[in-house]
Length: 413
Image 1 (cartoon, rainbow, N blue to C red):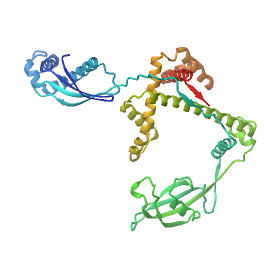
Image 2: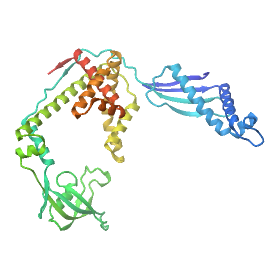
Image 3: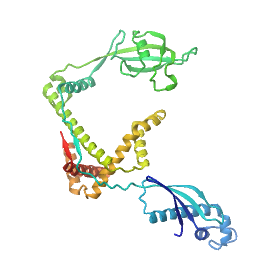
Image 4: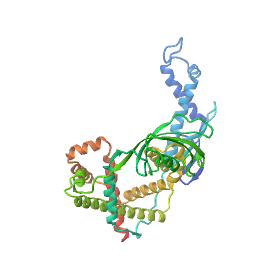
């Protein structure tokens, strides 16, 4: 395609290119489009395909114009990609499009390209691996969490204390205004579900009582407009429930799972905690290696990839709209680090021709099937249908890349 390409900006991974399509090419596109319309257009007094081209262009001027723009922009974009050999990182954008009758078509093409990693150094680094440890206190904490999950709640007829679950009718008003209809809340006191001033009012009451107090909102309250304000609060305490923990004995262990004794449960918890600590220590080593490679081989990352990752977490965590800007700012360094990690792994895998084989995938599927006590063929078909085989392939490839790196870098500890 005969077009004029003028680079206007090249900043990091960002490219801004001015594209001009000559008037001759525009006219050819208009003629071709008009002929396509003529073959199917029905105009009074003319058989299909027999209407004069000038009449077709006039009758379908806007539709032809739009089709010409779409066709030429797409063809010009492909021409730019072919000439410049761009590897696009995200969907390109067209800006400042100009298309006047009898004039060339021109526009600016904003492109974000993939980074080209030249990992000159991937060996000779030294990282430290912390030794995974599990002490008795960690085991006790985990057992207490299991115990707390199996606690029962019983109503009591007395003032609540921290740790109790209360049901209240709560209303707040601005100074001098009437209280609105109260709303019911179920709160575990001391758990941070209500502001301290409201909890203090609740703990003054016994079930059935109502109190009105002036309560000051804390300075770190999420809604900035309410911070430090003092407002009247009306609280009615409807119910108080107190937690009752099960006895910590062999019967508890048998209730939790297939454990003969409390000692057997503790041993399993200790083993699980140690395996978790080991995985965390291994993950920390891998991240240290990646961070040192990234520091020794600087490269830019596509901002769109970072933003895409942040958007995914915003959706997963269901971050409220008013908190999203703060979340984006705080999470951006983490997302940037994750994108760099993925790029480094992919680059090494491609350069060293490291990849998961079909045999590797079959073995991993067999492991999953064994854990599920299911048929490997059925598990494979299920994973394939869910589109998760690619995920398994990537996971195995990543493991192989890190095994390759471990052999070439010093792991202390």
